[in-house]
Image (tube, rainbow, N blue to C red; front, side):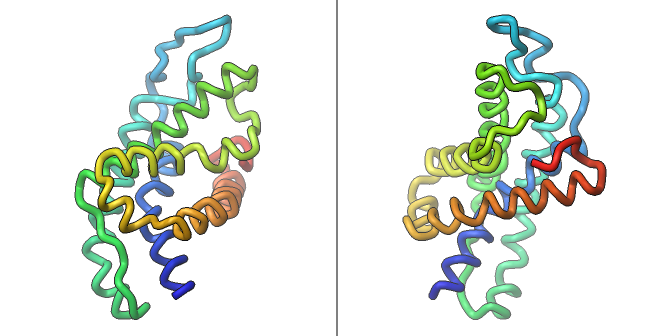
Length: 180
């Protein structure tokens, strides 16, 4: 029971976990804020680009479709049913993750933090809030069935650890300028 809860919750979050990594790898180009400022500070900064947002959303959505295909095989290995993703949910998880990260960038700029500056808590959970929020809006029944309260606890507890580990690896591979 605990194993299926943990694996199912993390499986359901995979389309939200991938977009920000894809945005780092495939991003760049024109910033979303177009260089605009508010209160003397950039709205978002150069790190939030249209290409990165599109790449992240596509990567997460494609992963959701791949997971749908892989689910029957993986279910045979783990011995329990895994969540699958209607297309709208795959897009919502991926785009919601990007929106959460964009929102965090806005908050960071308003609080005087520069691009790449640490903001503990926000850095690790911004994309989770965006992804889960948009998925709940787009598909409330899917969301309720996939993320009962204990599954949400698993996601909120495991994500900061996974986030720090994956960002540390990206930093060591020189894909990121900071390890958070």
